[in-house]
Length: 112
Length: 113
Image (tube, rainbow over all chains, first blue to last red; front, side, top):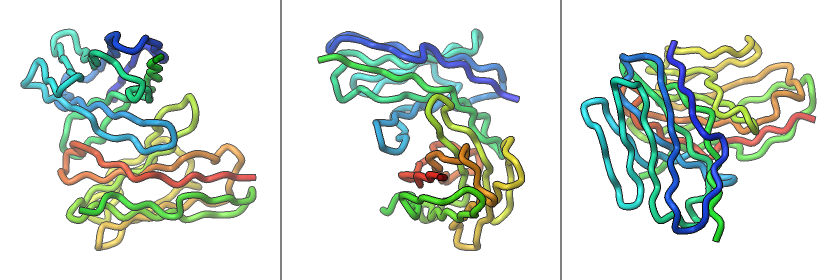
């Protein structure tokens, strides 16, 4: 089955710095890669996603890049703010009746 | 548009008891998945229901079961509770068959004492 590795498990940055979280996947048939943000005590929420026919997608301060050849994708957050502090999960899915496989999560801490 | 609703939000049970959790997906969503979340363990997949049928199942013991009704609402049941079952149980619904774009509920926090 699919295996998703996510790194780092913890990331500590200063406000205003950039943060990068990386994920690798094993199944080349995966074609949809969402990212979820879970603030403390709250539910995971979809913040950005990318499909395999696209190499990069941006939404204001966040962006996701995908390298299908290397089977890895990354979340980039620029100009980090304290409210970006949360656990971020990546996932890989191949659609159809297959459920997505999640990474183990990255705890991002943004220090004011 | 109402989100995914999970009830109850908090639950305290004693070892050996059973518990039933409920999830109402977004209107029109036919796929409902359940996850167990514990500190350091991320999101552990329990099972997924689509059109009242269990379509996928994770690696959990048979004490964990679920079902889905014709209106897409889903329930999960845990029998003979153990201390290790204490966790946040999240339900997620999806519109497409491909499970694209989950919307999670706020979860049920289960504490087993």
